[in-house]
Image (cartoon, rainbow, N blue to C red):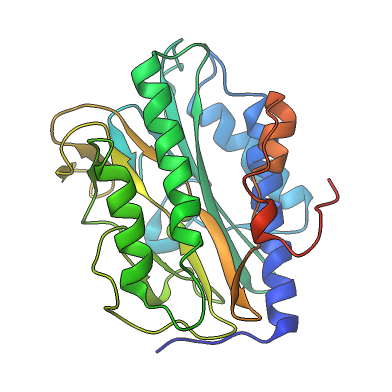
Length: 272
Ligand code: MG
Ligand code: MG
């Protein structure tokens, strides 16, 4: 059952999403060769608590940390470790926070120092596919329209779209209806309605779409050990159109990146 949110509830969800956005922005300056993902996890937990929120993943389904940290061939759900990041790595950071009882949940794949051009391209296309999908999130469309758009966009670049993991509705629970696959057929699946809030999150592999789950019950890696990227936004349907609740603006500010990719999905400019 899809739980529709009121305008007031969506404003509360925006607060939760922005805490995660700011956390990712803070982490953007800390992702560098030599840093460990466990150090970053500690920084994120402190930051979230300092902002009056609770880490959203810690303890959820018994996950032991604040961040899911998935380097290189890990797709999602990796654990923070004491292993230092190395020049040329990529690291997918997925972060959740709860404020006013509502979850924020989004993700960004960072490069560690300089990365090779092929991996850079994977990151770029995966992020572009997120907005290609968001564009389809409007009343009258269906879940399959978002999945179809993301899948087409990524497969035309020769990339693999992970099937086993999907986006989801978001609210007082981290995973609400509907499931939001990154693949699908036009015109299929549940219809979008005003006041829905979803997490759209393409998980895109350089090679095969096939993945495996490790014996730890969490970590997912690509079957061919090629890299995988993950970008996630929280989006509401307001006035029939997609509106971003999360933002990468804090990440871009930290990294000195100019971008207008989010402009079309915002009603007003963000005040950083
Ligand atoms: Mg997430
Ligand atoms: Mg999610």
